[in-house]
Structure formats: structure tokens, C-alpha cells
Length: 239
Image (cartoon, rainbow, N blue to C red):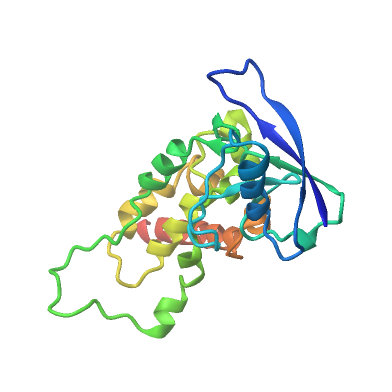
């Protein structure tokens, strides 16, 4: 089938302003949008730039906007679109464009690192592994699926607002949830202190866009709500 793509192009070193370029290719219904982009780069325009790695929805590197919605190009199939339908491909919102569909994710990972995304322990290291029951693990099992593709953060209306751009974003909060509800973690007091502010958990305005676009179907908004609940419980405990 024939696929028509309208792709955002911008090279800050050469272009004064961003622009769009149209491409037409033949594609199989089972092809992924990522396959189409690779074909465009190989057969039509070798200057087209975008990130990719595993191509199987594991690495999260090929996040971009497809017809206005943040998604992974490796998870969208040609058969999900109509023949000759124009497919609009743009970089993720919020982030500075490095070139074409590649954005600067350094601020994303800076905010992610700010919540101390690792197990905090204070007791001596045990001789064997730190035991955790299956039920305890299930508490944060969904959050582990996060691949840090930044689709949720790019889609969040709060992050898109210049007045609230310091908000750490849903991806960071999902990872905070993962450790805050891990029975082996002993750093909840420190972690809650990092989250209990307007740029942390309380920055979330419950718009649900993060949950809607998550390629791993993580209940992001629900997990942020649970963080807020845990923060309020900790405040009561201090009284």
C-alpha cells in the first residue's frame, strides 16, 4: 500500500526555521512506522535524523509524535492507517530539537535522577538477597515496565506549560512510585521530602494524558495519586 508521510525537519546548524517535507513510499500493512522511516532514510533522504535501537518497544529510543500523539514508531503498524492517508511525524513536545526528530533528553534524565531512582538501604547488607514476597512485588510491578521513552512527559499539559516547566513529570514520578512502594526500600522519608512540593507529586493536575499515551500501558495517573496519598499519610504520622 502507498503511505504518505509529512515529516518535521529542522537542523539548527543550517535552518532558520523548522519546515515539513513530504515523502511517499510503498509499505506492507505489517510494516512498522519505524520501518517506513528507515526506508525513507535509505531510499529517499539520507539526511533524515531520528533515534532508534532495539526496534521492539524495549529501549524507548524512538519516541516521537505520530499524528499528534506521542508514541513509539516501532509499535505503530502501517495497517493502523488508511492507504494514502497523510501520516504526520514530529519530534516529542517539551524538549529542544537537536535535529529533525531527535530531541535533547538531558533535562528529562536530570529530573529523573533528582528523585533518587535506586534502592535506598540503611541496614547491613544481608548474606543473601533482600527477601520480597510475590504480593509485595506486585505492588509496584506495573511501574517496572517503564522504559523512559519520555512519551508521557512530552504529552503532559503541565510540562507543556512554561509556567510549570519545572515539574519533574510523570516518568520521574512513576519511578519514584516504584521505589516508594518497594518493601525493601528504606528511604521513603528522603524520597517523600523530594516529592512533597509543587514541582513534585503536587504538580500533577490529573489530566490523564500520561496514562493515555504510555506505550507500556502503565496506570501512570493512578500511581501518582498513590504517591500523593502516601505523602498525606506521612504528614499525619508526623503529628
